[in-house]
Length: 280
Ligand SMILES: C[S@@+](CC[C@H](N)C(=O)[O-])C[C@H]1O[C@@H](n2cnc3c(N)ncnc32)[C@H](O)[C@@H]1O
Image 1 (cartoon, helix red, strand yellow):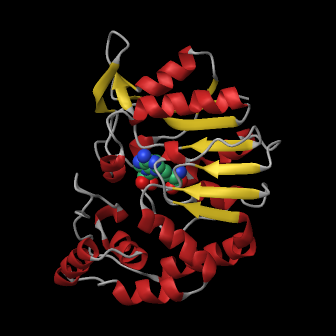
Image 2 (image 1 turned 90 degrees about the vertical axis):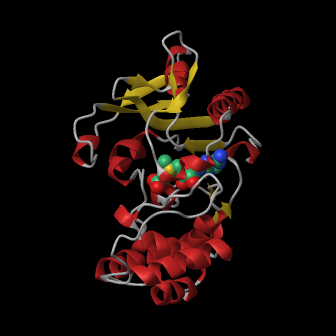
């Protein structure tokens, strides 16, 4: 399995072994609707005729796309990384990104940020703090194995950056994999609550009615005869995710995944159930 060089928050790399056997390989096309660090499209690209990789963060998609083309973004990002013991350099890079964003600046920020986590404020300005880290030998290794794999398939991938509901469900021949930001919780009376089940730095891009829109989008995929798999946290710290719970009570198939988030969670003791739900 290929690990992408982003250490992306919420990456499904550790769950791949459990996801790969469940995708619907009878469809010729695959859509990774919420690409993030790209661990999913990267590891199914050899199994589908065409793959679309989509994410709302256009500079993130820019990083993926540029890496399939040539080494320019690698050289630029290495040059832009402020390195260790250089907080002023990080602040300068962050300001520069917020004034004039580019994919290589975003990648350099991601590599230099606290916990390698990207974070945006409500105005979509990058606001994560300096993590006293940067490009290292491990990054070189991961980049090398990622690009030598992905460039073989570059003609089969289309990169797009749109809100998920603008991706057309054009036929019954598509396998959609959906790994959205953490969804909103369910109230005691079954209605959708205000709070998101957990926090991530890209939750700023998730709008108030997106849970409902995604639920409806998944039903449309189903009606069209295409396949979907959605993954996410069903229960966390005593809360239940409204959308996942609703899909399960609608009767779609689901599986609990085996992943101990407590190992990586800073809070340490909160119980989490991660599931996949699918319509085939
Ligand atoms: C949980 S992450 C996906 C992680 C990915 N599967 C991986 O393995 O790295 C969710 C992604 O959804 C993206 N996102 C947030 N709102 C979106 C929207 N409305 N439409 C499309 N993508 C969105 C975020 O930028 C984030 O990268």
